[in-house]
Length: 396
Ligand code: FDA
Image (cartoon, rainbow, N blue to C red; front, side, top):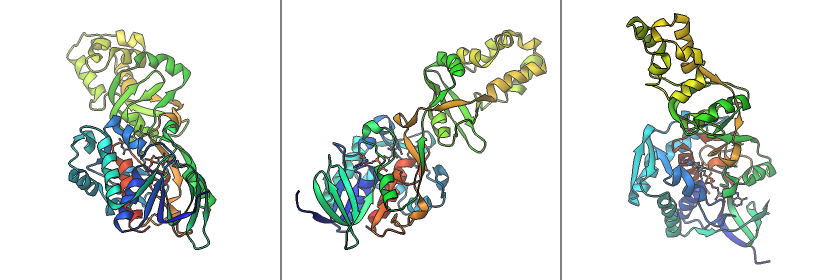
């Protein structure tokens, strides 16, 4: 067994938050080593945003995050905000562009973001050990921590847990961070998949799988939340940004309410058309606004065959309800296999919102997705990783 060697800071997890924390700590002159069991750092950065990494958003508010303690994220997001990260991206001359809703993506590749972080780390002397399995963590007699790893024993003064969530186990996701929190008596909120496609009940699946590949701009709502984005039909169920967003709020058994023509006062418009003596069949008129196959799935055939001019108020209202207040009860979610994030995690109340240090275990820090702070789709999860990692980096 090699000698136990000492560094000031050990960071477990060479992902977004761990690398950011390591850079900041190394800048302060701390000796820093980042450990990761994967064979390369930042795998999720590389696969993010379809390979272009949606690294932040022009507008970042606490309301864009889900947590049992909605106030916790405020301090970190303020102290290292989207403009601070953008300044780093610009310093590295990484070309980027804005997409819908202020989302910022690399023009070329997510590799640019990872290379920037690795280069910053190297510049300040942070050490990186990949393919390193952590076997045991314990408190050292001097108040620091002692680790048993596949690279031998190690000791540190500050231990940072940046092991992320459970999504995409194939990429190296593990429950290590949650287990370590529990080992030190820190509460962990139950976890579940977020930003994830939803599956349908068998009867609905039979109807809607015929629409696979069709995307429709929709407003998808649950009681208190609603998102206006594209909904995509897949052979397993419903996906697309509107569904991913609402999935983080959805609980099994709840129906979604979907408005497939959110910009239209459909009932009023249909009545107007009838008043003007429009003889078109409903299916023909509606097909100017929605795909035919979707109309066939949502509305009864006899209704679609009616001429507008012959429809009663009741029938027109029925049409509007089917299209604008479509209720569907998902069967479940696709789970961690395809989820972008994990909801729940290390209890914010156990941590300092300024430093990310555990209140009851001095020297132990949790950052990034392992913490019970989950962002919306749109660069918010990376911003949380950068912000929380940066904050911890000032104190470890
Ligand atoms: P992250 O997951 O980045 O890193 C954790 C690291 O810990 C990994 O390197 C892992 O190997 C390591 N690790 C885990 N267990 C370990 C163990 N037992 N021992 C040692 N090491 C261990 N967000 C966003 O804002 N914009 C986007 O475009 C996207 N796109 C996106 C696409 C896909 C497909 C996914 C799955 C996710 C996204 N996300 C995203 C979410 C984003 O990737 C995620 O929130 C951050 O990477 C979280 O950063 P962390 O540093 O917390 O964990």
